[in-house]
Image (cartoon, rainbow, N blue to C red):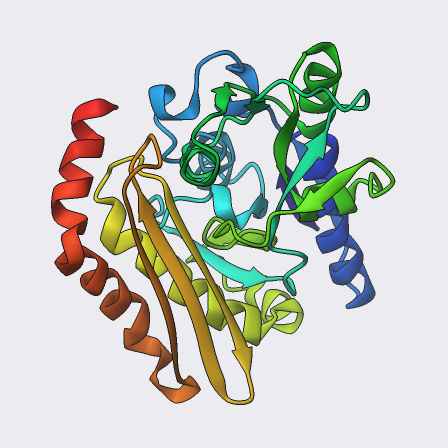
Amino acid sequence: MIRIGTRKSALALWQANQVKDKLDKLGAITTLVPVESEGDQNLTDPLYKIGIQGIFTKTLDSALLNQKIDIAVHSLKDVPTVMAKGIQISAVLPRDAHQDVIVYHSKKEKNKIIGTGSPRRKAQWLRKYPEYKVENLRGNIQKRLEKLEESCWYGAVFSQAGIERLGLSSIGYESLDWMISAPAQGVVGIASLNSNSKIQPYLRKINCKQTELCVKVERTFLNILEGGCTAPIGAYSKIKNNTLVFKGGLFSLDGKEAITLNDQIPLNQYKEFGEKAARKVLKQGGVSLLKKIKSEV
């Protein structure tokens, strides 16, 4: 029996069921074990105030370490780049849509206000639209959509993958293709104990190697830059004709400052690239920008 740990939100359960279906097809016997995370319990404070590191993963990490579950299913963008000792990301599913989208208020409100709880989304929106005000918006997708409808906002920013996974594509939204997405956005990650060798063969069979390569680059970029700081950082990579195409960025909290990269390298050079890209950002002013962000958080 493989016990699959998951958060209780509809999106988390959808992701866990995707993993369950794949494992069931391999002949594994599985069961879902829902748990409530700290991030789900605190819906009022902005993420940068409560400390984004591991806010949605701590409870599942604890369940893994106490052997109450065998694997934990996550939105990989929520998983810290430095994981709890003894835990690893053992597999990733093929990436869904990585973009952020703006979901409009149904009455097409014209007020220059948007909702988001993400410092990265807030910074990039204000960089492009400095005349806007950004309101804090937390909770699962359904709760955020309800808050949007109760507001007088122009719209709110969501993950396209989340909208599509819940079958909400009929609501009015538009892709923000200019916004650099979160590292590993749109990717379902599966964590397990390093020592649990019995389930690794199953996880290797459902792992998407191309997605794994891309998110390793993105998460390395994030790891080098963040330094324990909740900074607005975006990173996205894709593979095209044996080439890795990458874009990344570090932004000030108000969006007025930005250091961005657009690069392409031969695919066989990917292993060092995430770190090299981050070092380039640091050399171009990232060190002082990170200091400024830390002083403001």
